[in-house]
Image 1 (cartoon, rainbow, N blue to C red):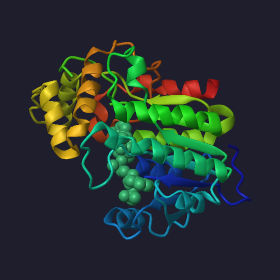
Image 2 (image 1 turned 90 degrees about the vertical axis):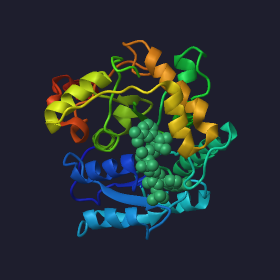
Image 3 (image 1 turned 90 degrees about the horizontal axis):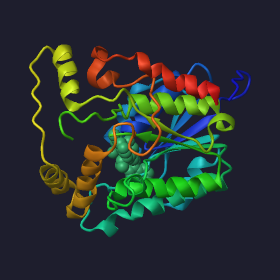
Image 4 (image 1 turned 180 degrees about the vertical axis):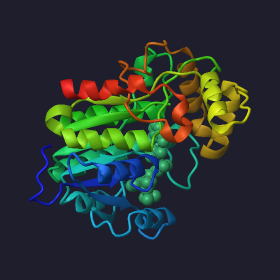
Length: 309
Ligand SMILES: NC(=O)c1ccc[n+]([C@@H]2O[C@H](COP(=O)([O-])OP(=O)(O)OC[C@H]3O[C@@H](n4cnc5c(N)ncnc54)[C@H](OP(=O)(O)O)[C@@H]3O)[C@@H](O)[C@H]2O)c1
């Protein structure tokens, strides 16, 4: 998208602006110097602590406005997207304050996703950017079919890409020595999404960008942490069953197989696969998590790739 200082900056409406990924996108869009953007931060509760914290952080910056939207309330989405150029959206597998008792309790996410892209299409949104995930059913050739919180996002992605100019980002997530992709879902997603809006749908529509850093194992992560915090860091891997029990104790029993199969897949996924897709390295990221101990040189790659497209 070409920058033009004589017209009002394009408005990007953000669903999930008070959450981890959305906050990173708000920050990166307001920092973006290549194209000036205005941001409409959408929330279900304008008075919540999270919304107030966000307001306080950007006090005095009139490029940031707040509005109401609920992904299960189609009319609210139409109102929220009415004057926007772009939309960034996350969908949530877990409904706030509710537990997942059965696998069917997760299906609502697809309804939310459909509401979001249909409202975006009805409002003539020029660039739709969504946080998605690959299908583990497809990636594992049918071996792991219960990682619903991945597969459903992929299902929404496949439907949305048929309907409007859309770009997708994947926040990638274990024995101690298994090398895996890491992402800072706040900082990294923000940087990538701002760059995608800057480049616009002409260069990025229909593309999916896995947002990942250099593959490292939990043990290497511990070594880096040890250097950065000057304290001994010990890795004590949990079993898949312990992990499933821990997460489902909070999220509900219906989530247990989903989360266990996700970990089983990560443990057996071929090293040259970033979950399900071609490997693309990120420029920024991990900064908040492990700091300067990492070799960041390889992260120049994605932006090289962007400019080639
Ligand atoms: N964070 C990660 O590392 C990561 C990695 C892979 C995938 N994901 C997926 O991405 C989703 C979002 O991740 P996150 O970490 O950014 O979420 P988060 O920090 O849990 O925040 C959730 C956000 O969604 C908004 N929200 C919740 N229900 C909504 C509804 N009905 N309508 C509109 N907005 C709603 C909340 O806003 P209000 O409460 O202000 O309305 C909040 O801003 C997760 O649920 C997960 O499935 C996350």
